[in-house]
Length: 336
Image (tube, rainbow, N blue to C red):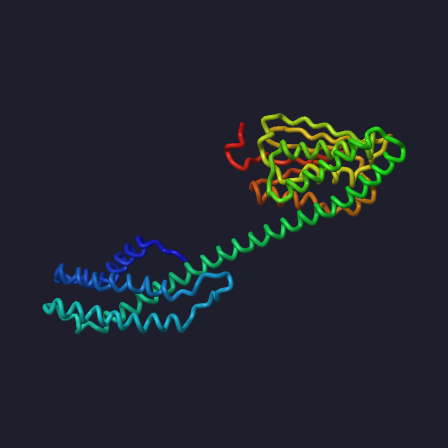
């Protein structure tokens, strides 16, 4: 725990003056005697500050928050000895004044100063420990959130790969001319996944490249039962987004809604007032409507809160379900 030297010295002078108020109120006290009295108290307070800081244990969230009786006793005993030395030194240098006759008064004053500084440092130390604990908790929360996000991606990608391979098998068996392109796009998609998965954020334009490959693969599987419309202003291409956010939102739409030729699922990805919106026509599956836990959406929301300090918006009416993602930048250099 760091404490400004300026604070220590200024507060020591203030305490020295404050402790000399009884002598200031005397009508016939000499100014040199008053200055010496303030000097003794201020010097002692400086010593007490630095000595008590030295006695503090190394800061850790595991450190005890209780006052250590042994540390306090050590400080009081050594403080009493230092006050004795200060008074003796001043007496030897300035024999005109009878400091020794007031030794008990100086020792009592030193005791009060020592207890005051120790209590103040204890309160500061507690506050600092609390802040350190909050930092550690936020770090653990962040690491846990990243782990949940990785688990979520790992759960989705094998499921998606399984469906894609089944689709490819059907295309090959029927002699579909897009089979070769499907293999290339599937390869590109997983290449993108390997390249981008390690970062906390990627540029929106890179996320859209992944999304377009993802769209082609989904179109081969659902054909005309699925339609994706991307309408994003190019000025937002330099903004950032947690990787695979749009893919996860598309998977979420497909998982919770009926997708059929008679009821096509239309998903729109567009920009609107500093938001990237993912909107789909609402036609929920009965099973998911009853059992959905919104874990994926909550995970994405926590990621945004962690990375940008902003939260996503979720809007729902009788016709549409919309997730609005706040636009944020890794630095001002990304703005166009």
